[in-house]
Amino acid sequence: MTDIRFDGRVAIVTGAGSGIGRRYAQRLAARGARVVVNDARAGDAVGVAKEIEDRGGVAIPTNIAVDTPEGAQAVIDAAVNSFGGVDILVLQAGRASDVGSSEALLTDTDPVALLAGLFGGYWLTQAAWIHMRARHYGRIVLSCALGNSVADDMEEGNTVASMGLVGVMNILKCEGPDHDMMVNMVVPTPTGDPDALSDVVGYLAHESCVTTGEIFAVHVDGLSRMFMGVNEGIFDPGLTMECVRDHLDEILDPRTFVVPDEAGQEIQQLLLPHLK
Image 1: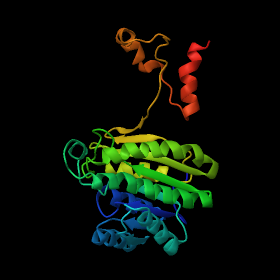
Image 2 (image 1 turned 60 degrees about the vertical axis):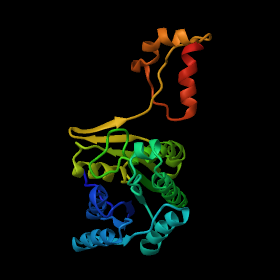
Image 3 (image 1 turned 45 degrees about the horizontal axis):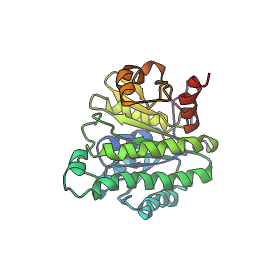
Image 4 (image 1 turned 90 degrees about the vertical axis):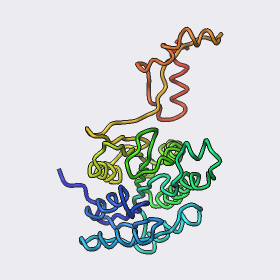
């Protein structure tokens, strides 16, 4: 089997000035990608780009904020102007926010920074998607925190932004394969090996990846799939409070679940068992 390479590909990595984002940028560059190192901290972005170049790679730094549609488009434009296009986007959700989820939602803390993490991710994903669709190729990897699965250098506030981007991913996955465009999510965890995490991101960013709309958790023992599914539940046209109480175990039974690819399959799963 040949090694996975990114020769000729252009990648944008956000939050790439330190931590996990820095590893993503370095790993893609080491495999031949030309990388746009984007980070709000200009000095960190410059430093990582220089590290890549010192190792024989190609990179440019940017500190363009993506908390507006114009900023997101400017990041895409920077890649196009420097390298001719964008093939890969690796986005760290919520990096603009240092506000914890519970702090932002349960206190009087200004939620603007937290919302910037969500909408910044949306705007950059949207700008990349439009560009990639016109080229009929693209790979988007969302690096997100979900629930308590938060790596050491990711803010707790990422959870809110991440859940919003799960919804965005589930919309894009329906259109993407027709244009050779795949979008997936990785969830770094405190026990996950950073190098292994970078390799998972690398595979999802590669042209050989045909998976889309999936969430992968990287943990101490390797890799697993995270998903939302629907089970058969119960059928009772006269559903009451007492019925829910008395059949709760059956309603929650995970053994009959499926993972729908689209809304139509979800409706089918819910109705067909009761139309036989």
